[in-house]
Image 1 (cartoon, helix red, strand yellow):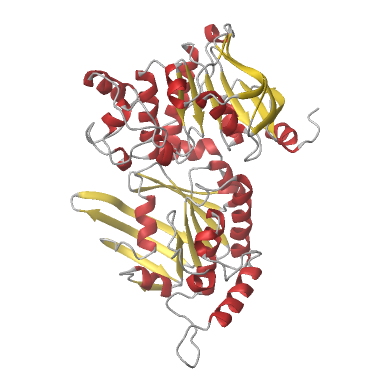
Image 2 (cartoon, rainbow, N blue to C red):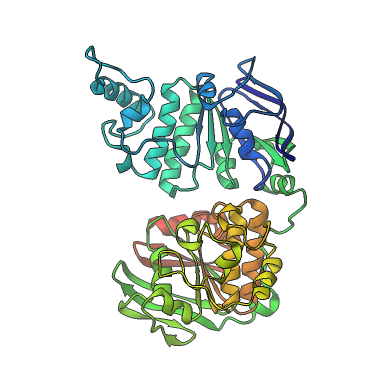
Length: 496
C-alpha cells in the first residue's frame, strides 16, 4: 500500500474540518476524492502534502508511520502535490524550476545550466512533453506550467501524486494531454489522488472513489461498480432526483423568438451564425474550444458591429455598442472567468450583487438597490454566507455563481448569458443552479449557455447549436442528441 490514512482528524479551533477520515491508495491506481465544497477534501490533501498536521490519526507511507510537519518532509517521503495555484518561479527557466533547491553546479560554483537542461529534457521527453527546458516559465501556457509541476514530482522520484482540480483552467485538448500524463504515471506504478467536481472525467480516468461529507468518510467505491447517481447521492446525503429539471408543459408551448442571429458575421467571428432562442428556452452553444462560442455571446452582450447579417433582440436589431448598452438592453452575462470578469473578490456579497458593471468592463458603480431586496435574493437563491458584507472571494464557487445570478435578477434581466455556468461548482450547487436557470426560462427569460461539458449541455438545454470555425454548423434537439453526434458536427464529420 502506497498511502494509508487512518482515522484522520483535524480541527481549526472549535471547527472540526475532518472527523475521522480513512483512505488507502494502491500503486498503479487513480483514486478520486469527491465531496461538496466544505466536505474536507482540500484539508485532507494538505495533510498528505505536509501543509497541515493532523490533530490525531495515523498517516502511513509505504507501510511506515510518518509525521509530515511541513511540505518538504512530504516531498522527501515521495508525495508530490499539484495545487490549483502552481508553485513555480515565473522568472526562472523550466530546468531551473525542476532543479530548484538541488541545482547542479560547475566546478567554479556557478549553475550548470546545460547539465540541468539536458536532464530536464530527457525527463520531459519521457513523459511525452514537448517543452523546451531552457524557456522562461512565464512564457508557458497554463497547461504546460501544470505539466512542469508534474515533471518536478517525477524528477524527485515521487510515488504519490496529488491533483487538486487539475482541469479547472484547462481546455479540452489540454485536459486530454493531462489525462494521458496521468495514465503514464499510473503505468509507471505511481499512485494518484485526484480531486475534481467533473464526474465524466472521473469515470474515464479513475479506478476508485472515496466520498467525503461534512468532514467524514461517506463511502468508498470501485468506479466499475458505481454510477453518477450513487456518487451524487452519497456526496450530498440525499437523492437529488433529476439533476436537470424538465421544462414545464406551459413553457414548452411558448417558443416565440427572443433572440435571433440572422446570417451574422463580425470581425473575429467569420460566420455565418444563424440561430434563434425562444422566450422560454435554454439554448446551448457547443463545439471544440476556441471555435467561436464565446465570440457569439460577446457579440451579443457587447454589441459588436456586424460585417453582415443582423442580431435581433425581441424583434429589433441591437443598437448598443458596449457592455453598458447590453445591460441597458436587458442582457445579463455570467462570464466564463468568474474571478477575473464576474466578481469583485474583496467586496462584500451585497456590494457584488448591487454592482451595475462588470470587473474590467467599466468603473465600479453600485446600482441603487434597496438592502432588503438584496437580502431577499440572498435568501431566495440560498446563498450560504456568514453575513451579507462577507467578501465574496471567501465563498465557494457555487455561492459566488448564485450571487452573480442574483445581480441580474435584481436588474430584471430579459435574457441571460451563462458562459460555463457550473465551472468550479460542486454537484449540490450545480443542481441548484440548473433549477434556477430552468425557472428563469419557464418565466420567459431565455438563457444562452456555453459549456465545455457536453453532458451538461445535453441535460440542461432544449436545443444545442454546434459552432465550428466561427460559424453555426448544426442544431440538435436536447432530448435526442448524443455526445457522439455533437462531436461529429464539431469536427466536421457526418451527423446523419
